[in-house]
Length: 184
Image (cartoon, rainbow, N blue to C red; front, side, top):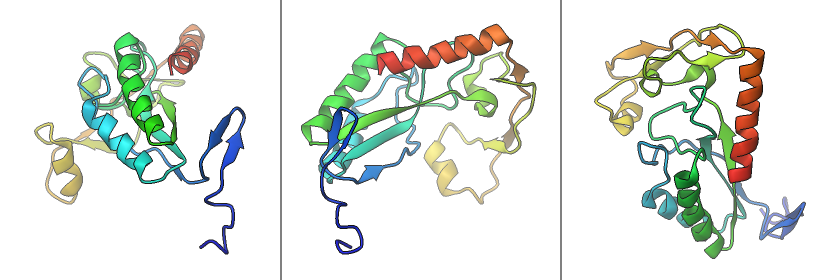
């Protein structure tokens, strides 16, 4: 391995950030946040374990950036939409930094593929009025059971049609990403 990738374990500087090596963890959906999107102690431990394992950079799972415009895509998705979310992420970041790694947040908006359980009585939103293909698998709110038994006979719910955002709303969504980035 060292012969094929001689600099893999050497530090690298990206802008003003120096990573201890060139090994990065790609974003993985974990669904470990509290129902309100606040990071949990389980998330602190999860990301700290990956950092302790020697990663140079961790990219978090998709994190919703605002409470408006049906931004949240799925249950137990972490957010960075308010002060409580920021405080929770601060604990995660501190734990990762204590292990010598860096962490960046992946901001995302659910768009037309929001789990209907996150929407209340609102439709998902998108740049155009379209409906996503596919479906959401439902069990008794037991995500792990769903994933492990995907070939089972589980109820499937199609994604509802999305409402097209106005130009003003699209700008507000973009502003939400900017605000989320500042909070991160």
